[in-house]
Amino acid sequence: METGKKFSLELPLKVILTEDGTSYFISNNKKLTHFRLADNVEEVGISLNPFSPQTIQNMIMKDFISKIEISMAEFVSVRQSVMDLSKLIVFSILYKQFDRSLYAEIIKCDCVAKYNRANPKNLIDENTKRSSSQLRPIIEKGRSRIKLIKDVILKPVREAIVSNRDYSPQERNTYLLMVEKFLDRLSLMNWYVIMLFFQKDGFEKINIAIRHLLQEYMEKSRVADDISLLIMELVTNSENNNLKKAADTLYNGVEDTNAMLYDPEIREKLFAELKKKGKLVTLSWKLGGGSTAIGKQGRLQIILYNKSAEFQEMKENIADKMATDTKKRTIVDFYRELPDGEEGLGMMYFSYLDESCKKVNVKFESIVNQLSSNDLTVINLIFNF
Image (cartoon, rainbow, N blue to C red; front, side, top):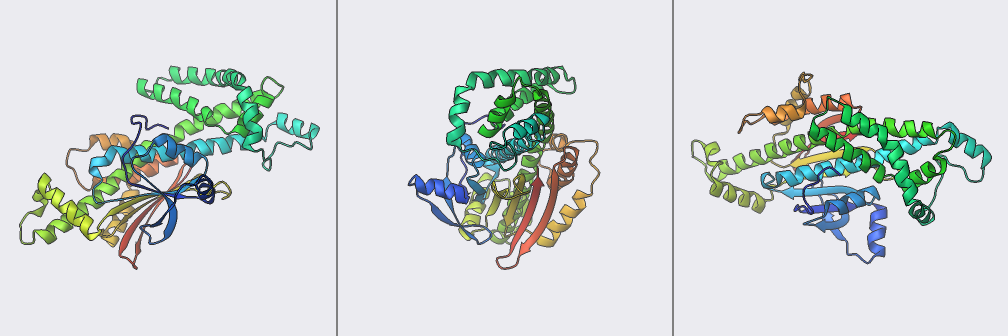
């Protein structure tokens, strides 16, 4: 997980559980909460604030979480925490997708086909199921062997990263750590199969598949920063719109209410008014479809709900910005070049993110809808990793 800086994060999370997650918490006598979410749907889950990033990642890796939601009037003061959470979620999905993709590649290898012909009662294929209780003792016993295998796999990968002159020193360090984490988070089943064929005829094809996928997912990981930046800009845009409307209402008749928004005391008063009236911005991450949802395991839907946004204007802005030519700069470059206090340009991030996703084969689409039942403007960002 590439958030890295804090042991815990302080955000008011509503964590919605999958069936597996619900069963786990109930079996461990943990109290669950019923939530009414921004889309007016009632769900079951837990509240967390503060929370450990590692706990959230572990729950995602075990398919315990279906959705995470935050509702606040003011996000700017927790900007870094929101971005860290966003990157945490994206990396968790990438780790899971890497694991699934690798298993799919391994079972195509000739050595596995040969093994299956010789062991028809113990096939290794897409239908193979081994429980954790069966696999964990084998993996624990083979820890020293796994360390050796990791070194064999990663040696040329590390050398390629270090010698790549296109990477900055920071990028080299990030990628060196990242490839380790992708292997550390492999499932017990993948490690069982890798151990089974290590140093046997045909293992080199498995090794090549692992290295190829490591390179592919290193590239995909680049969009994690882009996604977090776009989310924060959309949230900030919604927050500022709400503030302006609240100022126009509370200070009706004042010529320049925009200038008032820079006064800390006035901002605090406006945020209190927004909370009182329930004019909150809600950010939601909807994760895949669980381990059994075929074709949707690598799906991430990020949803922004805002009651005060102007629906048609927002929809047209997003359509216009998605068409912008962005081949010369990345979203991160663009973000760094923005002058302090510049407004409105956050919408341009859509086109930068779209270009970034295309380069690394991540499918991305954005949809703006309006829920007439409760006057919500809803921005959907949908990613398939």
